[in-house]
Image 1 (spheres, rainbow, N blue to C red):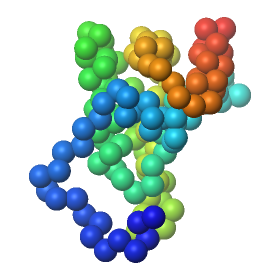
Image 2 (image 1 turned 60 degrees about the horizontal axis):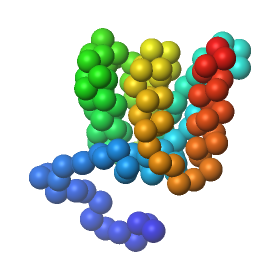
Image 3 (image 1 turned 90 degrees about the vertical axis):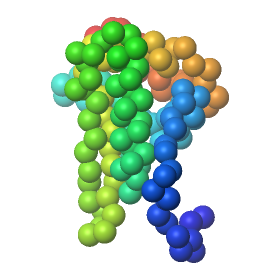
Length: 133
């Protein structure tokens, strides 16, 4: 859709605003709930091509959720890593693996939302595995 777009830079005054409903929609499209079989580690992740500013804004949103719940000690458990797909572009991966962050921040957040896609079934399976583990 943007392949013929010429102005790819946002204005410097642009602020990214992440809302709960927007984030849920984004997770329904680009989010992933997975389990590492060997270690039985649960992982929530979002992968985005070439948009580090957006990933940083989502990371801040999750950190602020922890602060609101007075769980500031969990701030360091939201990670962004990059995987270079070309010399110019990278995929950015936001991931959360920490058990306490998942239990006290992510699960209450996602449980409070109204899902609109089949991704909810993935989330419910992932949450069940979390409870069993």
